[in-house]
Amino acid sequence: MTPSPDARPERWLASLALVIIALISLGNVVTRYITGGSLAFTEELSVFLLVVLTFAGAAVALRRNGHIRIGMLERALPVGAHRVLILFQGLCGVAVLGLIAWFGAKLAWQEYRWETLSPGLGLPQWWYIVWLPLLAAVMLVRQLQQTRDRLRGGLDDES
Image (tube, rainbow, N blue to C red; front, side, top):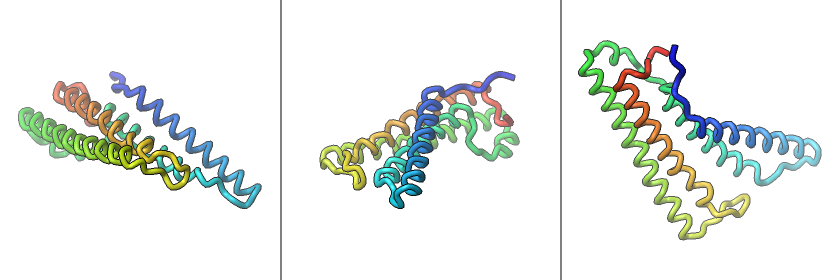
C-alpha cells in the first residue's frame, strides 16, 4: 500500500489552531468557574481559528483524496469518460475555490481600506479575513494536485 500524499503545512496549521482553541476554551471555562464571568475575546478568536482549522483541514482532505464523493458513476464509466468526469470535477472545484479566493481577497482589501475593527478585540478586521483567500488559494493548489494525481491513476477512490 502506498502512503497517501501529505499536506504537512496545512496539518501543522490545523493542529495549532485546534490546540489554541482548546486552550482558549479551557481558560474561559476556568475563568467563568472562578469569577462567574467569561473572557470577552474568546468567542471572536475561537471563531476565527475555527475557520482556519476548517480550511486547513479541507486542504489536507483534498490532498489525501479524502472528501466524500459518490464513486458509483465513476466506476461504471469507461476509462475515457472517467477521465473527462475527473477533469470536470477538478475544474468545478478550481472554479469555486478561485471565486472564494477572488472575492475573499476583495473583501480583505475593502476591510483594510475602510480600517474596520473587530467588535471584540478591536483588531483590524482584515487580519481575520485575509486568511479566507489565502487558504482558499492553498485549497486550489491541492485541488489541482488531486486532479492531476487522479488523472494519472495515482489516487484510489476506494481507500
